[in-house]
Amino acid sequence: MRDAETMAEGRAKIHSRERNLLAASPLLQSVSPQAAAHLIDTALFTTLPARSTLYDEGERARDFYCVLYGYVRLFRTGRDGRQADLRICGPGEVFAECLIHGGERYRTSAEVAETATIASFGITDVRRLADRDATVSSAISALLSSHLLTIMDCMANDRLYTAPQRVADYLLACCPSDDGAASIRLPYQKSLIAGLLGLAPEALSRAFASLKANGVTVRGRIVQIGDVEALRKI
Amino acid sequence: MRDAETMAEGRAKIHSRERNLLAASPLLQSVSPQAAAHLIDTALFTTLPARSTLYDEGERARDFYCVLYGYVRLFRTGRDGRQADLRICGPGEVFAECLIHGGERYRTSAEVAETATIASFGITDVRRLADRDATVSSAISALLSSHLLTIMDCMANDRLYTAPQRVADYLLACCPSDDGAASIRLPYQKSLIAGLLGLAPEALSRAFASLKANGVTVRGRIVQIGDVEALRKI
DNA sequence: CGCGGAATTGATTTGCGTCAACACACGTGG
DNA sequence: CCACGTGTGTTGACGCAAATCAATTCCGCG
Image (tube, rainbow over all chains, first blue to last red; front, top):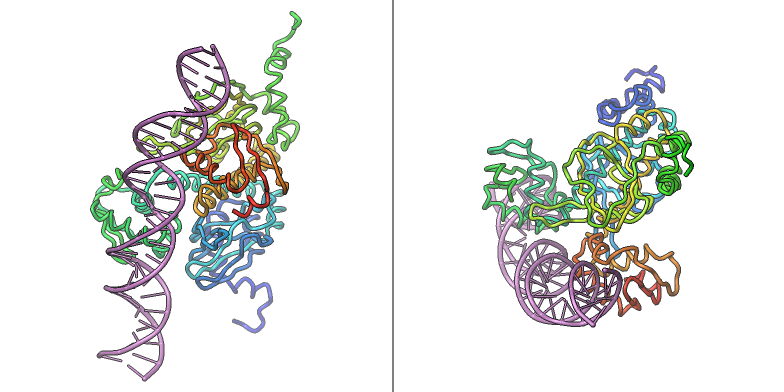
């Protein structure tokens, strides 16, 4: 860097990689250019190692977030200390955006699952922005809507299907719904997938084992599917 | 009615009870007067007996709804025919509003749980209205947000707690969180409550039975709670 | 009074969580 | 290069919570 660089130029250079990632995210892509510029300018960027916690359930909420790289796990902790995962957010995904409509405390805890860099936005600030710019409020509304649908799916699956069925479902959702054979690389650790599906890690293991009879082979993070159609019928 | 009454006056009189209920609903209360007037004018009112189905999962979506009276059950049906309840909507509640953001098919089935009168709105029409009137889009956004929070709660409870705990939770949510004793009238049939909590009706029965040890008495739809504080600790 | 749907109770089964032991891969330091 | 520790995934044994099936009982309503 040059010595004579101004503060503004410095800010533009610093985190330029993050800024680009953020600019490319679905959220920023669906708002007006002005709003996007404002969001990029006010965003704070952080990179955190796995297992670090972003916030705890019940904590006073100041920001909401967009994952740029890595994964973040949202979960709730029961009275006995057990945790239930509600969502795992990957690159481009936004979380805690419900709070824009009034809640003042986080309703889940959030911790980094795999080393992640994250953009954070001030809630009250974005609230004002949304009042001014309809593209923002409608983008947020669309996010809420899609999160709602996703979690409804998840809940229905939980209640209707057994572990192997849900795992099959998950695999099908991952693979670009061909028929015939397919090969998938799981996006993250199996224990995370287990949590996502509401299973203990052991149960996921067993589910994979039972899918072996249906032409599914697992080695490390690579999953080979013999026949996608067959899997769909489980 | 007078003979000389115009069409417009006639429409105003017909369904006047429904119109009033609709006008008093949280949705209409939180939009601009003009938008409210428009919604009331374009709403269609229906009264349906229990068990009638409003729409089926996968059906092409034309309308979304607001319950004015009675209850509607939203559920999804598994491959084996079993059903999982996702939500039960009572007076004032809106459902299927996700579709305003693009989905073109219903994601659940909906049937009347207890004789219900319902207002329906054209999705594309309201979509246009929301583009024009920010109070509408923000009201819908708020609805989405609160539904999302509710279902997240529900999902976390499912995964973290046992049947008696969830039932206790439900009772506490019903009763105006006093301490000391309380008496509640269940809003609908026990089998509905069971579905809502992700339980078989028999399991709900047993859960009530097991709560007897904690000072909960059930007779018909009336539930007596000995000590609210004690119930909270289960 | 008698009928039918709802709710309860009991017996049995099943899915999955829990605990514990073990296999495996990876990186570290001797 | 090999011994070692750690973190992650697998496998087995066991128990519990709740679904299922079946048999009554309760209650509302014609």
